[in-house]
Image 1: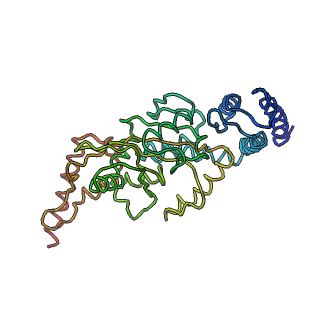
Image 2: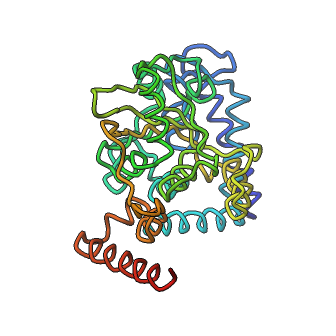
Length: 336
């Protein structure tokens, strides 16, 4: 039997099973109740529906057909593996936010319910994710907390995870938080961040944030006089009409990611990333006090993510900074 023939055979058998699920709630109304659909969806790798809701059998058949087609497409399988390996390389190179978010979307095991120590996060059901957003000041029906996203699992990162630390050290996030504090630090509604705006990328953490969290929201913000805590909320998905980052390699990859998403080889999900930003004083910036120009060591540091910096032992960082700044001073004396 050919691959397409096998796929069709499986689809016919599963379509029959869907009709059986339809009657398990006591009525034959062409709809499947969440009690029957969600366990089936979890086993098949499809999206859940909200508790107490129903999905039309015709809609379920459509989603099942796309999933089977995508799972049997060998070209998509190769692209999925290439993207997955790329995500792992990004994580190893210090771009933890972008790499981790992508890895989770591609690795089936990464979205199973419960705690995942390898990524320092917990996966919770869609219903719990919706409730969590409401608790954090994003009522159902607003921003990303809308019906079409209520089927998505939620990935909640640990407070001390590498992803949370990277996000908290993004100058993009820090500037948005300080702006909020300057306006009175009163949280009334989610604050939208367009992290694709490359003109606002001031360090490597900003780029990492943009590649991983896209158009996201700051929610549940609290200020104690020194620190602001809260969450970055985002729906991880791909859309070819997102506007572009002006990074050719990234923009080209979005088209492939959309293919993988349509074929259920890249799964959409919601993410909640805790942040903690110190606003009690301006962050220190190393600069030449005479010229007011940044030192070479500071410029080099701006090109490194928090994860990359933390992987370098402190003594080596100190020696490296002094060495680079010493060379800069010597160069300036020679050229003046």
